[in-house]
Length: 219
Image 1 (cartoon, rainbow, N blue to C red):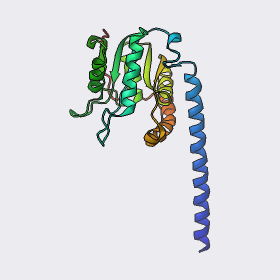
Image 2: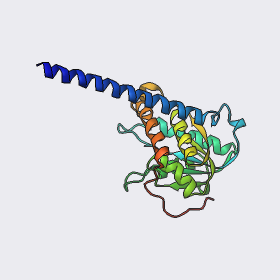
Image 3: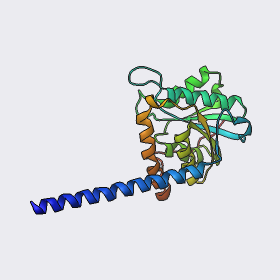
Image 4: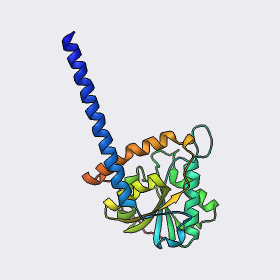
């Protein structure tokens, strides 16, 4: 019984130190991401101060949720992309999303929504291999030849994306889409916090995209 108590106390102590290390890693990653992206995020209130760039990368997500409603993250990113394009700050839009199966195509969903909102089809380029944020931003540089560009997403995700892009040598800026009410986005917000540590590790170990392929010209 005494040995069992010792083992239990050791387990509690190790668990405490593991939790403490995880919290410290998250805090350090969150701070690094915030300061790396600080001053590089624009939105509708500061669009006049935003610099002009060749293109913007719109980060993909599911258009329709499992219960059949439109995903507000998706719709708000489309709205932000239309706004940025119509402002004249970018010449074209790269819609970068997951197309890992024939029946799931984030990029085409984004393109169709942008065209329906008035963006000329020949100003939109589909990136079907944007499986992760890292893939989308690194492919913008290595496949589409961009050294400086905008990224479009919600602000918290956007800061991580800008940090990642800068970590891979890109002069990246963000244009923030409207956020989603917290009661509809708890899981997404928690996942985003966990992804901060992963993003820092990706930059440190120089993780590469799942798929690159040949270079593709922009319009």
